Image (tube, rainbow, N blue to C red):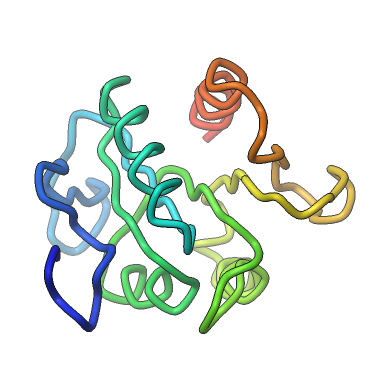
Length: 149
């Protein structure tokens, strides 16, 4: 909602319409995977949105963990979460914890895309990529995670 002070990063102008999984209560089918990008850096969010929409994905944006949780509670059901860890208000770890305690959300693959130096084993089943990785490697990880879903 561009221009909204309460949720400045969600549903940017020109982004695809929100879609829900067929098994959701709305019963609306979608023709492309939905990726929830959670990052406090507006430039990173916008760049990822551009890259992902150019690849044919629907994208939902959140500027911090709390916005991501609100989106999930409002019925956004992503096929993949791209998650930064260091953010204000609520960190990526808070989002991770929220996803893991809900059996439905725990099935959503997570790509931790962060500047924090982490190894794969540090976060269980999530895939970890550093922010300085090339776009081809990022898209390869996205494709792999969506195929595994």
